[in-house]
Amino acid sequence: MNISPSPLTDTGKALLRLNLIAIALLWLYPLLTYSQLPETVPTHFGAGGEPDRFGSREELLILPAVFSIAPAIILIITKLRFTLINRYPQFINLPAFYMNIGKIREERRSYWVNRYFEPVLLLSLILSAGFLGMEYAIFHATLSGELPLLFYIILIFVIAAPLFIFFLYLSMISAQMSREIGE
Image (cartoon, rainbow, N blue to C red; front, side, top):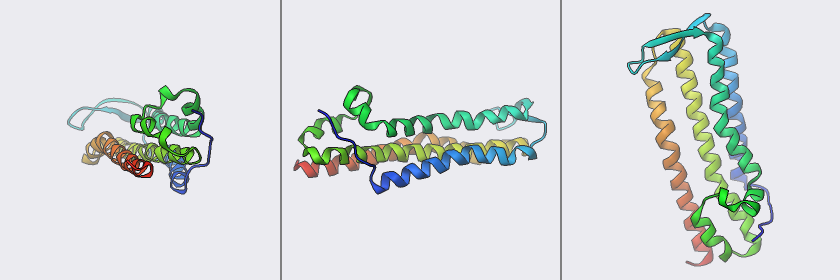
């Protein structure tokens, strides 16, 4: 089955733009605060939030690079979504999508591909926001000498919330698709 490409929905386009802004902020924040950091900063914190390793402030510049990897990969996959679905469907593992896409009228299939990528873009945005919060907490900790409680809250949020929201959104879209095909 070959699905003709079509542009993202308005929601998808907005999520894409917000993702680009979030990735830019992941880089902008450290660059703007870098000059405020002392030459030697805590680079690792123990479970109690106390620093247990110190290093050069340049080491902190790896954070935006590391935190940008997952969102950037998601944006690339989104850009290549139709190529991946048409040529390598095994890479896009969405069982509910593949069970139902053949039942959708051909002219509506690209719409549903785009709808299924909305939660993927939302996941990326939530991850980026969480990473930005972690970045803030880490930079704050380098100045104060201990990780704030905010870091641990964000860490839990970055792990749990994106997955919960992703699967909830995916479930909602699957239900809408099922209604369209009359199941």
